[in-house]
Image (tube, rainbow, N blue to C red; front, side, top):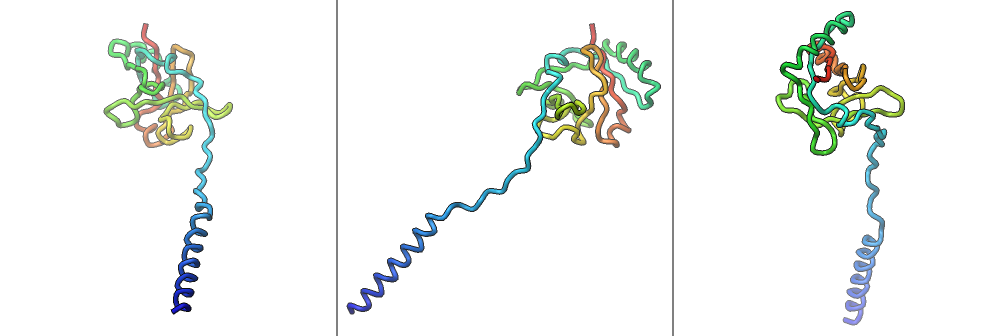
Length: 158
């Protein structure tokens, strides 16, 4: 009996040691998320909030004429409001409700307007072709959307 108690104690101590060793080992490493480039917002929400005339063109030679048409659009302006998280509200392609977007740029690269949780240049983004505070020209990144909507010209309403 003495031997069986000794074997039982040894088995208990071995089990306890194994459990404690498992507790002492470090947790498995977490998968590392790929680093996203930090982007800046060179165009602020305050710079684009307001009422805009809107028109679009498909051929570059129509840009000047389209800008004049956009001025006429101030009779029924496209309104850009502040977003709840510091961005601004604009419609994405084929969406009936506006979404909060931001301007984003990496380094000295192109400026885009799009969803804040997507990298600059994402398919749902628009590239800023021109912005001077009074005129904003945006080109859709998705070729299919660009084919339908063209290059968007926004002219600030008086």
